[in-house]
Image (tube, helix red, strand yellow):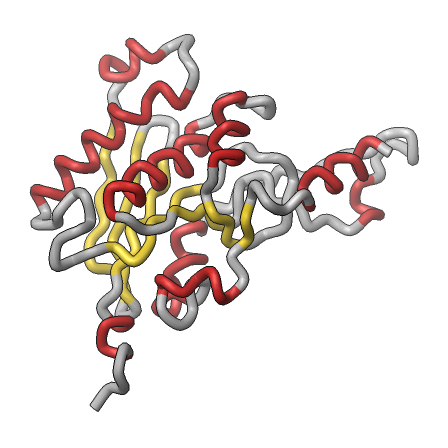
Length: 217
């Protein structure tokens, strides 16, 4: 028989969200694998009212469509039913350079995405949509391997001589897979115990600020 807590851990669900320019993809995963996935397409007519506006203005529009799709699939949209979420993960947006990893969504991250100093992009919605669903469920929201993750070696930053230093912007399309592959590798142990296994607190750590300074020095 499974040890105490093992059975619950095996059935924990993680809601993973990947917002794109014209679609919102999301899925529910357990340690056994995928339970359901959906790909909601957004037509030009639907997006017309958002043209020229900040990307985060689309939060309620996209979250509302997700809630409808979850309800139609038999899941409680607020994640508090029998299929309670253990965590919610979103695609990381255009954040300052940082190491690959799993980052807790906090006020500092949301503010950075709201300011959009590195550009307006659909991936900026990942953290805020994840936070919206996580708060409703009473769990944590995370982003995994933001699209601006930067682990370049110093020599790779030199372009056209030492006077020009470049940064990295690599789109990590496998955020959901990184979190859920192998039954939740990034959230090893109980998904709810992610904090004990190396989650990074975005607002607490200043490592990305140091990374920014290195590129300017």
